[in-house]
Length: 317
Image 1 (tube, rainbow, N blue to C red):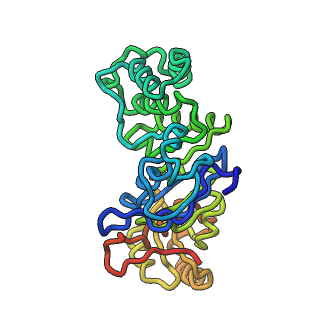
Image 2: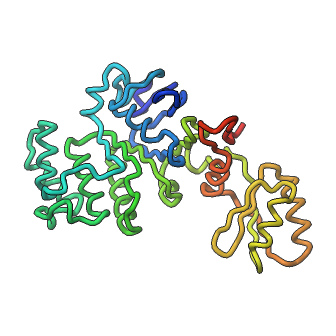
Image 3: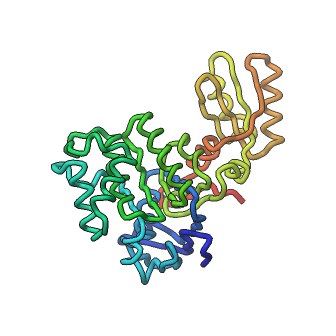
């Protein structure tokens, strides 16, 4: 295991009863990186994060988190990482300051008052310090939860869908803070469903129903999937979409505003279809570089629940 990676695990496996939730999962997260963790609901993202932070013991697999063994040193890992859960888990009948002070006491932190004051200031919570947590909006609860994660100055943050249910401005503010933390050397593993957040990550891993489908630098993911994409604009797009789904070389048709993005992995077959339709002069066609969103729509379409008989996921060769 290399010191270059904050997380370096292989073969992580976890089952609950007869259901294998995480199936031989590997991930290497470079120190200081923002690493996006994507996948549909029920894919095992939360279970994986809980194994990484010491809350669950893997049935199989090995590796390290911040240099600590995920199987034998789980208790130490818990004290070294910051874990932000999907659901707000602080006390709604305590004020912002009281919640942070309580977390500081649980960690038995030194300089507790100074740490709380610093967290209030850095997360923009100082003016609301006396406000009860239960009266906060989703965005302010998110800030409070992040402040609580940062009190013990962790070098690794594990954020489980932290921006679900908050407004766009709160999401932007949250990501501004994540980038500031990354610039200071904090490693961030964040699960998300939002493509505009995925593009802000340095690296991405995509998991579907327990299995990792693909990972790598964000900019390289579409090329790894191997999609060729054309853009179609013009009248009556629903009719064109229905027709395209039966055409050679077309594996995916996705609506993007006033256009269709038509994708496939057989370049020659797709280009022949586009040229034939283009000759009809009913729509404007232009080739474009496939992006993360096209890639993940494609992967999602091939993902199947691990309870579904004979189900498989699209995995690039």
